[in-house]
Length: 143
Image (cartoon, rainbow, N blue to C red):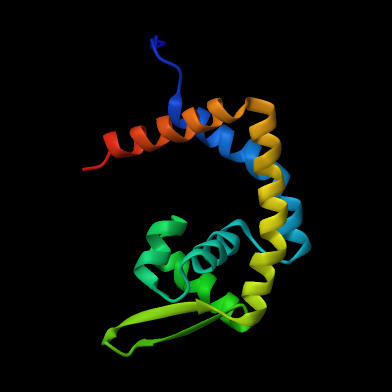
């Protein structure tokens, strides 16, 4: 028995779009010895500085148990520093080290070049529309 769907598989299309975008960025990440997850963590820290691990998990879309391992490897490699939050000892805060921030700076030019290419390929208005539609979809699906 086969089921007939009326709509295209949006989650699959979004994953496919993500993989398509990452195909251009991933080689640069690998040259710097970074996984996709490590890059997402560094990008969050590069944008926000010192943050608690809960925020890193939310913004980098990494589940807690996985984040623990990712952060341990990044700390071992000298990319991040973790410590107890002085204001609340139950929480852990994370920040990029000078080495981690230098990596963010180097990779950000590669990432921004890709976004500039996207903007020139799609057009500024279409890229803005894509961002707006994705923001609306995310807001619509929030509990």
